[in-house]
Image (cartoon, rainbow, N blue to C red; front, side, top):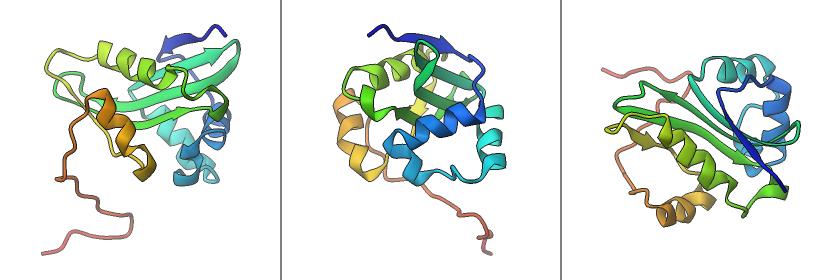
Amino acid sequence: MTIQFKVNEPITADQFIELLENSTLGERRPIHDRACMEGMIRNSNLVVTAWDGSLLVGIARSVTDFHYACYLSDLAVDKNYQASGIGKRLQSLTQDQLGPLCKLILIAAPAASAYYGRLGYKHNERCWVLEPGEYLGD
């Protein structure tokens, strides 16, 4: 298996959706809302992908200022390609695009928490989420 990694290679919403469906991440993303999925791809400013020929098999999709914070919004690897180092390589290549003081930040799925700890991420309990439809209180 020869996997090719690319930085900011254009991908379609269909390719993104198919990858999410073929990974565990599809359960937690709005894959049936095409406009949302297109916006997620279009508005990401750092996307590292893994390809087996013309098949998208992995993605690290981020929003970043490249200097202080990089929010790794999605890390997905096709189930048939997991446990082969693709996810780790996607994160490493993402880090390579960032400045020396830039933090990599993510919210892990419950089942993936141990994975990130093994890679060297530090757990942070200070994350807060304001859900759609909820508004700032007084």
